[in-house]
Length: 264
Image (cartoon, rainbow, N blue to C red; front, side):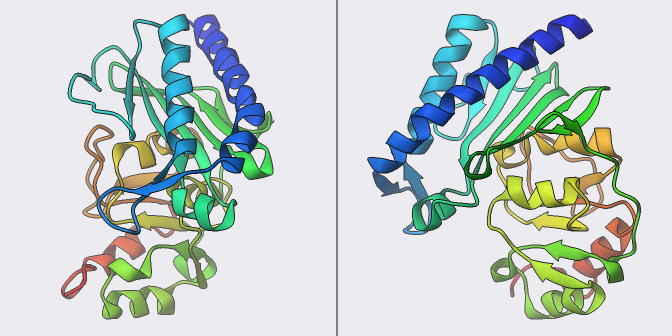
């Protein structure tokens, strides 16, 4: 894809994202919440309406593009063929419902399976993080510097302690400088992107949770792999880590030592 074409799509997407500023407050004021698999698996009219708006935007402006997204059936999508957008309309739905804070919109644009544009829009803070293939990563237009490699002992790390066994949790606590967990894969990853966290670990992400992070990792020299240190498939996802390159190996060694990281 020509650079000019890519920049035009980027401009168009940023314009669409800006329209959410007028939409989201009203949706929240009229918020309706339901559950999916269990009482902790929430979905709202905010999620559904934002996704519908983006689907309409694609149909009107890029009808040849496919949408692979959380709140739809994706059986007819070929995620590694042609132009594909992967979307989480609200990443951190529990945070939205319970706090109305710490949630974001995630968009990843792939061309024939190659990450090409990425967006993590932190709506409550009016902060847009984006990456453009071979042109760097930005926050509200300012270039994000590449985080310097650092050892785990100097870094804060992020993971959900409810899905790991106590031995692994304690080993991570002991090895890292400290621990935080926001509860939004996109926003926890943003802290890694900016060098504020050393790593974010997620043992059960879906493709839309991690769609944007691939390109940020490429542009900023971060490590993004499975927890077995294999290449991560954006179309199927699975347990993953995005990390500072200085602590990646040490964290994986901890996660895979003894009986591993899973609860038993």
